[in-house]
Length: 203
Image 1: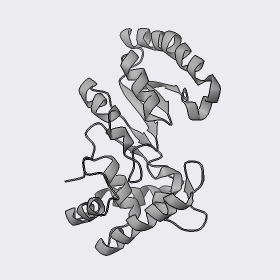
Image 2 (image 1 turned 90 degrees about the vertical axis):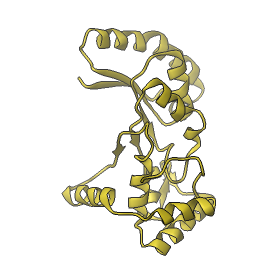
Image 3 (image 1 turned 180 degrees about the horizontal axis):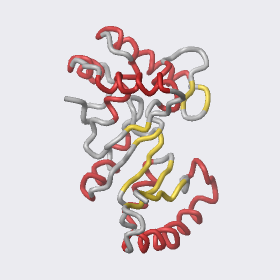
Image 4 (image 1 turned 45 degrees about the vertical axis):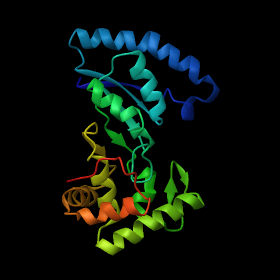
């Protein structure tokens, strides 16, 4: 196998049981996976969760090749840039991003019924996305294209796992990935406080 992930050992999924689940994973699952990696049965081992803080805690304790992070580094959220993503760069760990549309709203825009983090988008998120959409309109940039290209601009992030239902959506994702986006677009996002100043952006 190319890669095996320890999955859902985060607080969002486990609640009050998370500390014990986390300990079990670090003391048990990791050792088994490390042996399989050493034997060449798997090429890489990682962790797949909803929280970058949990990813960082695992990397501080054990040697992982990759982290499948769901929705925590996007146009809306860049706190993972504080300490986690720099640590991944330092350690050579890759971070493929799942949920890079924040589970819907960065693909649909701030419309009625928009989804964020598995549920209806709250008012503050709707307002922030509306602000991003206005900048998109100023530069004739589709919101999903901006979201896709922003995520993979980070050197620690090799891929964006974009869910697709059919071939049409697959082709649309490819078109968004390759759409030329002017540098002025990201500059305006940063100027308006809609994007952190210190995050990498596409060339």
